[in-house]
Length: 286
Image 1: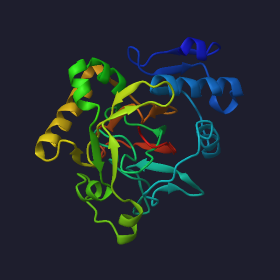
Image 2 (image 1 turned 30 degrees about the vertical axis):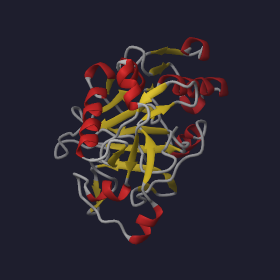
Image 3 (image 1 turned 180 degrees about the vertical axis):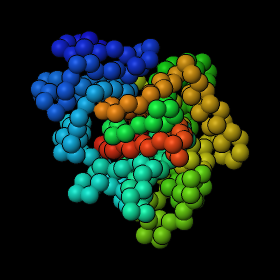
Image 4 (image 1 turned 60 degrees about the vertical axis):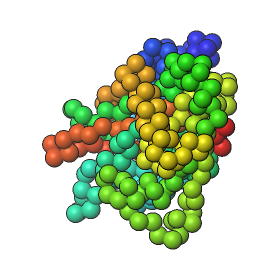
């Protein structure tokens, strides 16, 4: 499918049949046809990597707009001045104030799973990266689903998950927060399927998450949550996971409809890490 969709672009898989690295392209000067090819690769393969890019904020906004409407961020404190859709991840402190969110995204999850319409795409642009640590891991939910037995698939297919932003913020490992009444009202609890169908081609993906889930509908109580932990452990085995080692100029995009991801820690006393994060609006999971 990738070869048919991108006849003019050099590419290679990130891991086995998962993901695509697009080679030899300069995104700010790329043609419409080349950019359409990058978009097609994203929808077909779960993740896309483009290295060695030099992107201004305007370049990032133009590029992300090829995929759909950029999504807002629940937390707005660390958005880039003048660019509210660009969120800063960083451990830098300037004039005594942090310039970005630090250790955000550690723990297997899918972005905005607590929203009725979770984000479709997450994009990170690397501004500065440590020499060691801070890798991003992507787990392939489609491959994990296909690896399950037909009996297990039949057992999981009808199950749904109860997601709660309030619960997530109250139990965060890196600084628990109690929501204001306004934030709680703006982020009510939702239910989503455990097995998600991809709208592009109908492929199914195992779609658990950590942090936001309070209950497995249809299997309530500790038994359901223990089962969910087992599924996350299954999906995040090395055979389903791509580990991305960052370097400056990398753009990594992943499809939240069929993956889980996590950041990893690094020596934040020795190194600096700064990323620009952008999201694209998604649709209701089914």
